[in-house]
Each structure stands twice: as structure tokens, then as C-alpha cells.
Figure 1: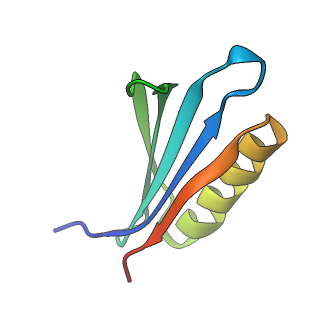
Figure 2 (figure 1 turned 30 degrees about the horizontal axis):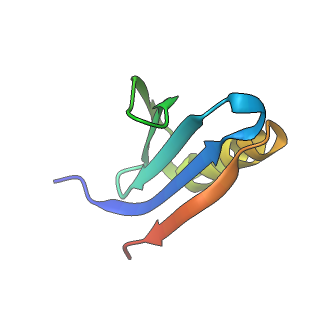
Length: 78
């Protein structure tokens, strides 16, 4: 059974964007991303990254920061 080991939630409320992005890291190397308006998720996409999953999630977080997103939640389940 797949186990969630880390979760990050970021928002962008600048310039009336009101968007949310979430990245979830699982123990089997899966990264699940979700995004949409702040009032609910609209889309999601899985990425099977194996050993590179954590680096991939960090890279996505940095991309979002460059676009004006701010981290509002970081959880580690290990």
C-alpha cells in the first residue's frame, strides 16, 4: 500500500490569481500534483520519479516560487 511521506501546499494570491498548488510525495517514488482555484482542486497529475521523486518535488516548488507562489503548509509524515 502506498504511503504519503511529505506534502506541500502553495498559494498565489498576487494580482488576483487566487490559485493553489499541492505536491504529495509517496514512499514508492510517486509525486502527485494538484492545482486549481483556492476554493477547490480542478486538476491533478501523477509523476512516477522513483529515486528522483524528492528532487522533482523540490524543483516544482522552486518553479512555483518564481511564479509568485508562497508555501502555506509543509508536512512530513516519516
